[in-house]
Length: 168
Image 1: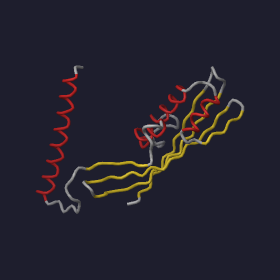
Image 2 (image 1 turned 180 degrees about the horizontal axis):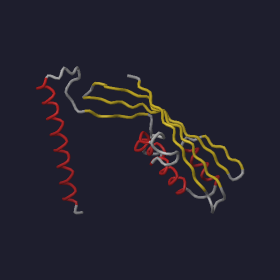
Image 3 (image 1 turned 90 degrees about the vertical axis):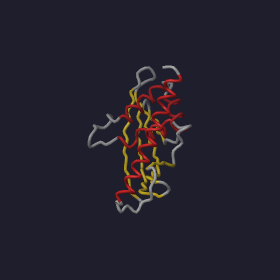
Image 4 (image 1 turned 180 degrees about the vertical axis):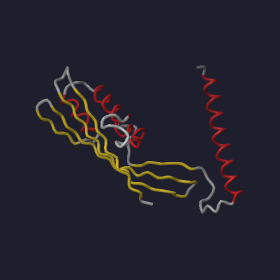
């Protein structure tokens, strides 16, 4: 796609988003909805993740909250599939995989041809409207990663537990 077309699409989306936000705020004010919240755009923020330098944190940011094991069988969530894909992208030597996962913050145990790692992360998530905090959550992720088999015949498993606690 030529650059000017994609730039035009980006500008159009920006204008549409701004227009919807302004329209929603105007309707809210006109209707006198009794909302105690000031007018403003609703937005979300997360803290506690290093998405630039940590592949696991990047996956948590993008896909972590979509893993619901009441809907998906263990191992079938998108983040779990992407974690397995990430593990498979690493060099096949167990010691190298362990070193990489430890460098990202995982605690790993190696035994024979098995590598078991646990990665835990607390994420502070906020929903804001303008400058007012509407809701705040402590999201806890516990990710179990397992690599079994020999260098040329590795099997990769990932299981994600997600617990969200509302703070405000």
